[in-house]
Structures are given as C-alpha cells and as structure tokens.
Image 1 (cartoon, rainbow, N blue to C red):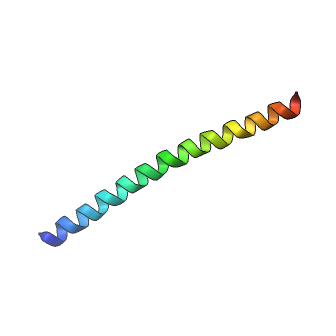
Image 2: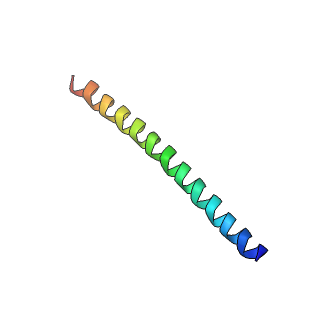
Length: 45
C-alpha cells in the first residue's frame, strides 16, 4: 500500500510540474511572439 501511495504521489508531483512548466512555456511563447510581432512592425514602419 505504501509503495502504491509513493507511485501515485510521484505521478501527481510529475503532473504538477508538467502543468507549471506548460504555463511558463505558454507565457514565454506569448512573450517571444509579441517580440517577433514588434520586430516585424518595426521593419514595416
């Protein structure tokens, strides 16, 4: 039972880390996309 609890805990923490990294990645992606758009607008102007 304790081993099952350990595996479920590891799976939960792994999912939590994945969620956090995906959120950070999304924020970074949005920021980089905004920077790219700014660069393109600067070029066009």
